[in-house]
Amino acid sequence: SQTIHQWPATLVQPVGSPLSLECTVEGTSNPNLYWYRQAAGRGLQLLFYSIGIGQISSEVPQNLSASRPQDRQFILSSKKLLLSDSGFYLCAWSVGRNEKLFFGSGTQLSVL
Amino acid sequence: DAKTTQPPSMDCAEGRAANLPCNHSTISGNEYVYWYRQIHSQGPQYIIHGLKNNETNEMASLIITEDRKSSTLILPHATLRDTAVYYCIVKVGGGGNKLTFGTGTQLKVEL
Image (cartoon, rainbow over all chains, first blue to last red):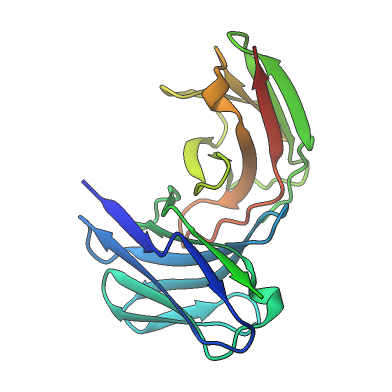
């Protein structure tokens, strides 16, 4: 069966520090991968979308970047965090044209 | 993709049916209606989706009006564990899966 791993669960970082969040998927090949962010009390905002290795689409201009070095690995990064980067970050995957998204357990990021 | 309108919150007694409405008056003919839910501090979970016909699975039923301008998600026997934010999303089927989540409806199931 397919599983998605996302870590860490919580993270507290100072302003200006770098960020690296990792997401891996098991049990499927060539998944579509996504990074979403949810600010407190808000809906989910799609940040990045990838249909394959090295193929990244950015949905909104921001302080973050994403990379997909392997088929089932998706990384969210920042060189210098801002206060506004705080939020709940969720990784998700889907296969083919199927609209069923499967989400990870999320990372609660607090930038102080 | 068409926009959706949902009430911000609803309450439901445990054991009763929870009926969550969604308005999507600008929906086009090739757009599907999807429902997800998000339990506090977890990732969203897929519930059900449909195009024209009513749909039912082990989690819920989806009723789409004949003109497709609105729909209702029905949880037939709500339990405390169904307390969550429910998202109604309208999107063209296939061709990428970039679902846009709004603020949804906070359903609170109470004893």
